[in-house]
Image 1 (tube, one colour):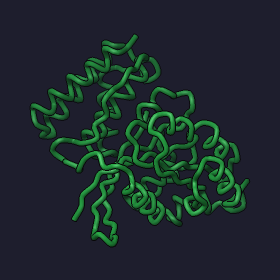
Image 2: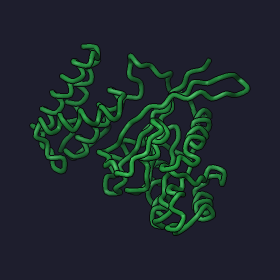
Image 3: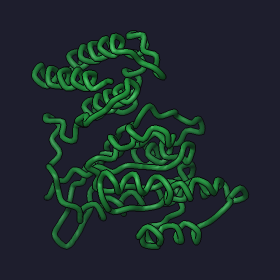
Length: 279
């Protein structure tokens, strides 16, 4: 039985429902309250896919990426090493469809090249508020090389087409070159900071790194919020002193949670190096 790890990202404008789609797929839950993303939220979902060659175990590492377009550095960091991507637009806001063509697709291609793509037209349950439909999505998809059958209407609220569409992208990702087999002990897929320059970008990089190492998205984000508060971090304009305290605090959390001393020290050194990149 083959075992794979595949990194996919959900990309799209703010408020399109990316976080709710992930919650629906990973936890089979929906929340009406919008959960604001800090940089990116990372979740894992293990699925089994059958084929002529047998059964494949695919560990999907799902990155739910911040929707504001002025966070280009964060987006570039999050999109590195993708095996596939889902663009999400809001059927009640036409500009979110155009944003896929104008911003999100070029950003991903620039960093990861042309990987398997899908477009989700989300909020299909709000029919009376729709500003466009599947035909317009297919039209935009055609301009960037996405086949019509990879353009899907979804509803995070009702679950319409959510699970089967995630499985579809997972199956498509099996055609991409395999980087490594998922290893819980080695924490494969850990984010490594490239050249980052602003303190805010470094903060987001550290948060993404910790969430992927920790593995439990919801609990991990709660830890991040507490440690950031205890460190006195200004989330808009963090300073180096507060960032170092934040890194110290999450190091202590990792030790308390039973992560090996060696891994904790490697994580700590990597995050201090991230801080060193600040201008």
